[in-house]
Image 1 (cartoon, rainbow, N blue to C red):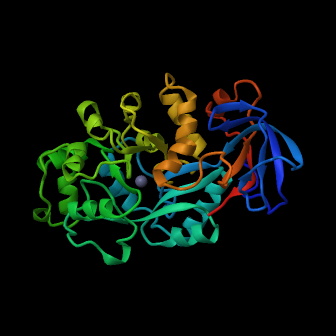
Image 2: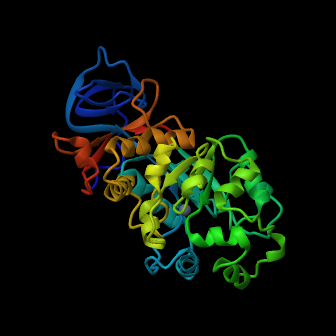
Image 3: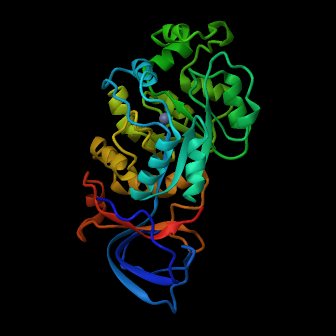
Length: 372
Ligand SMILES: [Zn+2]
């Protein structure tokens, strides 16, 4: 079982864990001060408590859909089949959003990049005082006009499911923006030539195909042609992106959700190719409609299993500072002046980072809460 959702408000104190993940990497027995608001501070003069385990900033889950509950869908049937099965399942709900926030906090999540369809998750996150970047999702290749009520927090679903006006509008807003990207080969087929399994799906959905200008480009080249790829762009999945297309998205960021990829398409992104190009990485669980839980650590363990040649430090950075940078939120680092949430993970003293990502559901508990 995971630890208590939140530590109570407490007096200023200092902690000396066995290990901590700091700006300098893994450090043995550092001392951190934390004030009554959960803000890291100078530990001098504070009573020090020794704690066994690995202290990390609370995890950042950079891509979730908290309103979506579990939906039974066939494995590795592809995105077009998955979305059809998903639509036949349970609809999103406010109750599920509340459960999702609770599960996220229990899993050690300090901050979320959340995709909402109904606004319910915003309410649940606000009630929990959880730091989050919440975007309202828009669909429709034939929806030409940008909806004014969500223009301040817009996320187009994907390049193959949204009119380019939405993508340009989202990228023109200040701050980070996010889009599902190159998740399945049918996305590329539609954008390149208007063919493939996505076309009959759109027709069955009653979309006006004539409203969408087929760009004749790959997903990466299509976004690059709009001039929207910079570090504010968080591309979710990039499962199928390879070679020269990775060069095109090197100016952006990628959020990896490999458990969702393994379920929906059975494919894995070219993570070594992303690292070779210096693409900043974040980690997301995606929704319960394609993953078994909302545990960012389990997501990173799946990455460790899929890419054993990649150093474990890459995954811990992506789970913390990488996600914080992608969402532009002041969490993800054990830095004085921040309130990133102090999370103690009960891993063995020997090789704590190796153990952290070995797939065990390690007990973890909050020593201090993140501050929204
Ligand atoms: Zn998603």
